[in-house]
Image 1 (tube, rainbow, N blue to C red):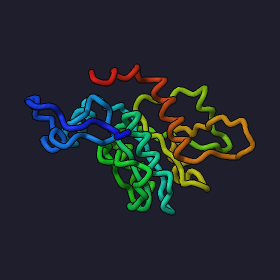
Image 2 (image 1 turned 180 degrees about the vertical axis):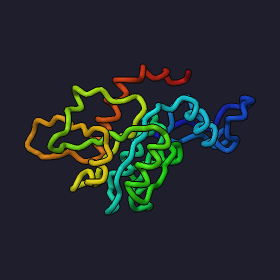
Image 3 (image 1 turned 90 degrees about the horizontal axis):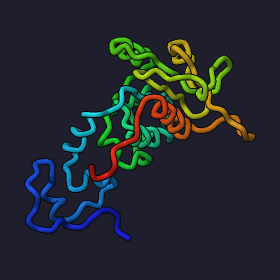
Length: 205
């Protein structure tokens, strides 16, 4: 079954947010129904009007394949921005083009991220199962913050651990020692949502 909607019946609505090509040819994008036929620029502008005041950052020293998932999840939970720390290039396949609707920033080093966060008065909250970390399940996340995730494998770098105001762990009950950064990011972002956000508007509103 085709995704999305076909051509819009004529006469077309008079709305500057709508894309004539999508009205004529149909909108098969993976967007919420309320954004059908909108231009990408109009969607981003609307999202910018009510983004949540948290950011996410992920370290990228070895082309981490989880970054696309982190970006897609940040879009789903409407993070203010995503910050790639380390290598500029990352595999966008997992983002499923959601990076077009999300503000993605690059910081060559952890020190650059820390300096930027300081100018914005945003504490860094590390997410990793490290000695001395506190349980995410019983820790309130700041409303304004940067949730930071480490490279797959080694986890948070020492530089992030030193700069973070707190490091939160995610409770696990099985045999594995860790979960990947893509999954961890979704858990942490949803924890923020449960603390600070109400229910989203119904589609079509």
